[in-house]
Image: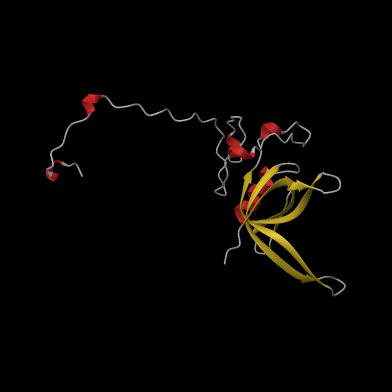
Length: 178
């Protein structure tokens, strides 16, 4: 069976880092994920609010480097959690257990007020922005790919080798280099 989910959205509030009784760190946060289409009546895009749980180093990483408004890319699995509330009613909640959390924007997108201008994601270029940045704080201890974005030039067109690079081989297989 396959249970893998990848989401990209903005944090609704700052992550909450707690520790279990045995001292294992766990961060919980909620992200708002825009839908790809607009509402039929209003034409406005709606968002889904999804709860995420990140354990151990990933949880510590999220609580240290992410805050309300930051764009996050979450990779993990969907999990259903059931419990009984104070009135004895059975409750069920869907949440994502994060294996990896990546930056979905650049620190430079921050205008200083905690709001982000939203120019950091362009779907046609693999999900990274077109600006270059070099910020050492973007290293991910959780194994996520957070290398600085660079504008890569297209590879140069191959040039034809000089005529002197070729030599005729006889039909004898012993002269073949492989």
